[in-house]
Amino acid sequence: MDWRVWLAAVCLAAPGARVEQASAEQVSVEAASQAAGLAVATGVVTVNGVSLYYRDIAARTEPTLRPAQAVILLHGFPETGDSFAAAVPELARRYRVIVPDLRGSGLSQRPPSGYEKKTVARDVKELMDRLGIERAHVVGHDLGARVAYAFAVQYPERLLSLTVAEAFIEGLAGTADFKRLAPTNPRTRHFARFAKVDESVAEWQGREEALVLWFMNSRSKTAKFVAGDVTRYVASLKREGGLRAAFMGYEAFDRDAEFLAQADAAKLAKVPAMALACQSPAGNGLRRQLAAAGLQNLEGVILDGCAHWIYEENPDETLPVLINFLGAAHAVP
Image (cartoon, rainbow, N blue to C red):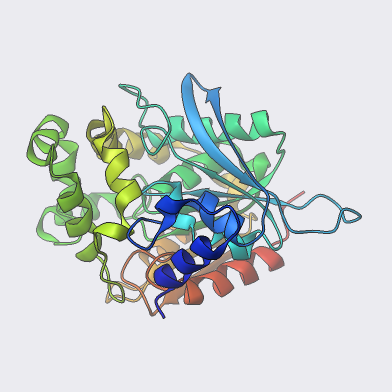
């Protein structure tokens, strides 16, 4: 059975489950957590000048044990924190899990600026401050991977480990070649297209569902996404300023590259890090980027059952890899 169908069924069967969590509606992190018997708190806090919505899922640990380590999950485009709905129940068996909607997405505020990844990373750092989290395992996918790495270079002392997946990080090794070749690659030609924010908003305004389904299905190997799978992503883009905010993440890529080209990654040399990539002829380019940046305590894993959406196409393959890495990671003092 497809995990999305299973999870929706479980949510419907859970005591107090909300009607809108039916299989025709995308399952939220909140519903998935509640269905798994986990305590989930939600909130909105103002950090770095922006209001962020977050979910805080308590680890299922015995009260006598030391406080659970925190895992922070950072989503990509065109998603929200709900992209991790299938991952949270398993992760929260061992960890306190924090899932924000990043600046400009989901239930978070859509400011007119601040989509440089160093700025979004500061949002995450200040969210940690507000939640009383000193250090965390930071996990990012797609644009969230770029945010995770920007967090790492700015706040290495706040890391327990770094996991990045399915991204090219502008400013690291290969950036010039990538930028030159991206317009001719079907998987990356949207970078320059989406960076033209006004044109992209005009093209997709009123067609948000078509955008999400086209984008996700053109980058999927083992899942066929339908409208009911992406209702929360579509709603995010339809909110006032949602499309513009989403495309602003691409418009910021050149500034992201300038920042990282000058950033000092020396303090990341010994940080436990993992780069995840889906099987492709290019191999694990993200691992090569991190190695070239000087990360030495680095693992690279290639996943077979996906093309991009590692938490939605085949979470049964992704989660054991992630959990094993987190369990073995020994943070730098």
